Length: 361
Image (cartoon, rainbow, N blue to C red; front, side):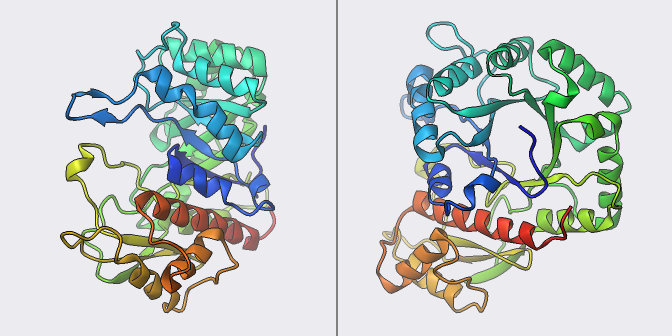
């Protein structure tokens, strides 16, 4: 499917906080969201020094969970986080298994591939498209898009997948670039978007991230963090001429490009509430973790959001409503998973509101 400039592509690592965020979106907003879902490997058991689950058990519930939380709405599925050599017990490639199972439930999925994907991954995407005929999504870096041989690399990929350029969507993933100075970066992105294969692709998405990898440098108890990826996208749209193709917008939601990996027994973050605001920022309210406390700080942190002057109100999103209810005691104090869906659900709603305020493409 083509992704329209009015649609939003959040990159979501498929854990409970992320899929609950999608599930709790207002029904009228869901058609404007096309999530790019990164399928994660099983958690690691550091005591036993092995994955907590075999790959079949880990991926076995993916399709049912997707159908329950997102129904048959379109989604993009990226298997890059799974080790390339991983195979299901019956020998199937992990991407093949995911799409076989999702297909049984009527899911509308498109596989995501990159230029470095190995031959087995390419073969799996080829075979998936031969059945579903949804094409594929190329997720590439800015450096790759600016390579003089980029079009040749794309053509080689198209040949391997046996699809036409009109069946390929391209996600230009900037990662977390140096956002300043903004003007030159906008110019470089425009140059990349005007490449031959970019112009011919079914649709193009510009994706980036700016949420900090660690919050230890943020001021207590509350600080505004700039959503630089949104400000960059808005500047890009403003700079484009009417003849230029407007890309769709994507981001990493309320997460950094790199995410915490390690023994979670020793990786306890401080309580925090992340709240997107409409001027291209996030409010981050947090407190120092106190020994013996788990979630006692959350009502007070929610109060900081409510009194910030930038609170959107309880009716704006399910996430926003939960913050007010937690402050008043009408909702439980929750845990990190709850606060991930709260932040992500509200963030998606804010981005859709931001997109609606842009001039029509």
